[in-house]
Length: 92
Image (cartoon, rainbow, N blue to C red; front, top):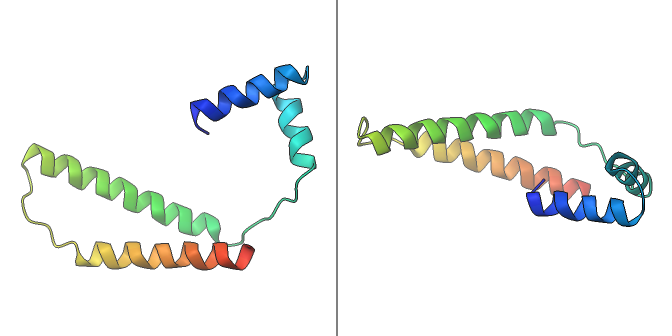
């Protein structure tokens, strides 16, 4: 949630004279909730790639690495993106 979203939700909850929890619960009950099987594994893998990219970027900025064979990383990231695309297409 972005800080802007949080402020807007707080504003709307105050306007409705509700707590943020009550407001979100009420809003949530009016919506269909879709559970996506397998998404947790994909998100976990995406987070791992993000951590690896952050570590590699830090090492590159420190000058500790200069050349990187990134073909495997690009391939793995492409596969993850395709999985996310497939999941979102199946849901919508």
